[in-house]
Amino acid sequence: GDATVQKRAKSAVSRLADISAADLMYAWATKTAADKKLVDDWKSLRNRIAHGNSLDRENGWLLYCSSGELLYRIVAHAIGYDGQILRISQPGWGIQR
Image (tube, rainbow, N blue to C red; front, top):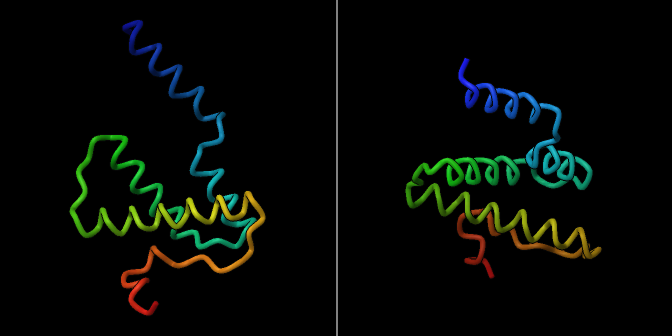
């Protein structure tokens, strides 16, 4: 077929051998006993934004908060922090405080 299609097909197949960012995140979550829903939400947010899809306001905010909590947990793990991390992925997380 067309050379452009061949190039795209080769590129797509070659990526199958690579470890995806999502696979790495799920492995990290398993290793640290982090909530895998945070990774699910990050993956959903990333895929929607990367492919130009819109988010409704409420669901987009929840995905954003989950991704923020995931980032905090990754940084905390990286620096060896083992204290409490607020569950900002949960609606109403700051009301009790």
